[in-house]
Length: 190
Image (cartoon, rainbow, N blue to C red; front, side):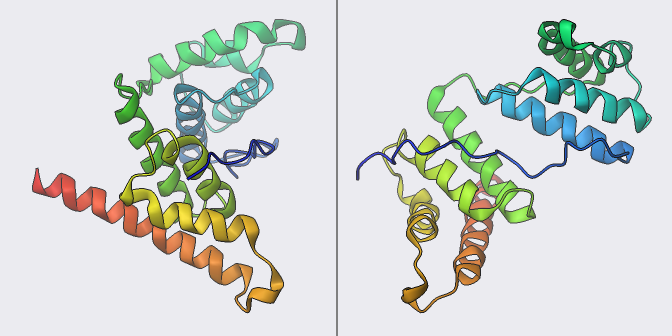
């Protein structure tokens, strides 16, 4: 199977970045999400790191470095990644993907599938990421075939197919849930 085309990189998530007040749990979830994005090699701009810090501060999250991160000025943006990591460390939220590259790809696949399943990532974007950033590098393993199939269908969907885009979206969500359940079953057997 050929490598997916180098299409425009899509947003990794739909987690809000607006300047709205979040609950403490929402703010911690946003920090965790951004930590994983960065750990899996995604570029996260300093503006997002600072905004996440501000959201967390306003939501009542406490960390010695959080106010420093949230208060960075535009001219201080280069300091944001280091401060963000410091905040994560203080909160006990640092995330390191597995050192083995194959294991890291599998961890990325499960993380993306989890976001598809919980609705925080649109299936069209998530399945494309699994196809382009995971399945290709792993040699298209059978476990990812349903998600890759969904990516192909969503990517090439045409109205003339007689199936709605929403139905294909739902199939992708189900494929993600099925993929996640195989992991849970495999871990339960360990």
